[in-house]
Length: 318
Picture (cartoon, rainbow, N blue to C red):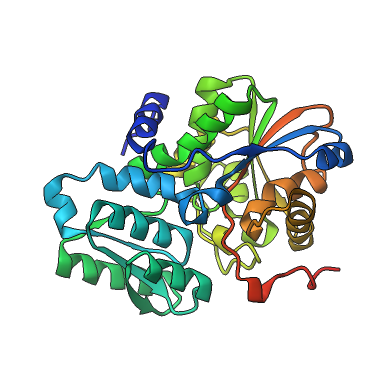
């Protein structure tokens, strides 16, 4: 599978423009003062389904032929991609078959069902998820839309950085979280084309640090038993994504659980917006001095805002 080019992201943007929100770019004078830099937050927590994932899912679904679309789409996901694919499918009027681990957050199960996704629950292992999905794909003929190891999904995710640079750039540094690498891949491709002098930096939890280890050892190292409050970043980096990341990303850093919660709380309290733990990881990298951004203009992609309000983490690290 070839890696996308910026022209592919531009085409994706035209394709999905009328279906997605052009989310706002917000700033906070208080955070700028505290951190001695100029921060601009691309608020994908305000995207449809509450996450950037809708961009990639929407692009992939719109590219299906009528014959493919009639058979529907399928995926395995414990969170935002499942909801994104369910909504994108509903908007095209086709079925979405979603395999979810039974341990997925209740709020995300409800979201997928609410968007019309046909859910099949399985045990919370990669083997169970893949086997269940393969069975459903064979029975239905549905097209699998992978959450990140997918050309069309990467192109869609890259449109968030494209909008960020168009609306508030150029930047000295662009930061985003990394899990499977779909957002980082698209972000890096867009940034290299539009804002080539900017550093592209990703952040991930220390308890789920396969992307960081893979990046620095220059080989793909799968995640083993990851543990983090940032449930959106538990997955291992995809093979296509890693190839792109190696070529286009300047650095990947890790942050502590305490740092994630502190960053999440700062965003809630100072910016008055809801973000999930995964979204707070890039700001945590700045708070923990994992990169020097003093006096610099920084773009940060807030990846999503789907958090279970019954299980807020703020009391855990005080």
